[in-house]
Each structure stands twice: as structure tokens, then as C-alpha cells.
Image (tube, rainbow, N blue to C red; front, side, top):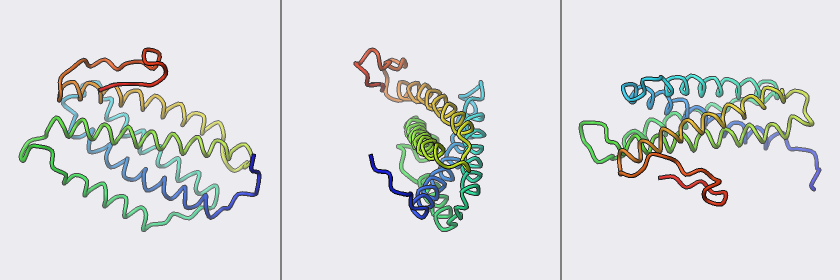
Amino acid sequence: MHTSSPDPALLGIYLNDHLAGAIAGTELAKRVAGAEGDRDPAGVLDRLAVEIADDRAALLTVMAALDVPVRRYKAVAAWAVEKAARLKPNGRLVSRSPLSRVVELEALRLGVEGKASGWRTLRVCADTDPRIDAGRLDDLIKRARRQIDEIEELRVHAAAEAFGGDAQPVKPSDTGGETRTP
């Protein structure tokens, strides 16, 4: 086990990279919630968009507690990349494609998976840094797991709708530990 003292510059780079992802993820979540409002009568996507924005704010709080400055150029670049991603071809010129829904939900899930990894990394740091609220991170990790499950359920339904097949995800216990879904 390697136990040298941490390099604060590396943590700053890491957190700013996660902030860039959080900015892009917040924009994507808002866009998906707006585009899918009629397909989401329970308001799951609206709630997820609010939670993802709250998670970005939580990251900023951690960064402030750790005296990590926000690198604005990374934030602006992430915002611009998310906007540019909207221009990708989706098989339709005028209307929204079922493919868009699948790809956007996959991207959203990947973003939340990355966020969860970031919370888990910070949770390790919280064991030795009293400036980091371990209990808050435990709550954020738990919420990220729930968000992943909810997004995955929506993604599986979108994939079945777009490509056919069963809209039931295969549970890890059914595949020897690996989750296989459409």
C-alpha cells in the first residue's frame, strides 16, 4: 500500500475534470428531461435533472472546502462540448429519433457512473481529511446508485422501443455477476 502525502494539485485537476463532467451532465439531463417530458408522466427525468444540478453544487461545495479553485476554461469547454453533441446525426432531420433517446440516456448513465466514482474517490479522501463531509458523500453515493438504476430502466425501455426486444433488464445474478441489457 502506497502512503505518500497527496499532491493537492492532482486533486484540483481531478475535481475540475469532474466539475466539467458535471456541467455537461447537468445540461444533458435538462435537455433530456425537456425532450422526453411527454414520455415521462411520473416526472423521473425532471427530478433527475434537478438532482444532477444539486450534485454539481455539492461538488462545488467540496471544492470550496478543499480550497480548489474552479478552472473556468474547463467549465466553458464542457458546456460547449455538450451543446455541440446535440448536432450529431440521429437518422431524422426534422423530428426526434428514438435513437436520440437511447444515446442520450446512455450518455446520462455514463455521466452518473463517473460522478459516483468521483464521490467514492472523495469518500476515500474523507477518511483522512476532516474538511470533507463523509456522511454527505455517503448520501451522494447512495443517490448516484439510485439514479443509475432509474436511468438504466428508462434506457432499457428506450432501447426496446427503438430496436425491439424485451424491456426487462437482465439482473447481475442471472448472468454470473455481469449486467447484460439491450
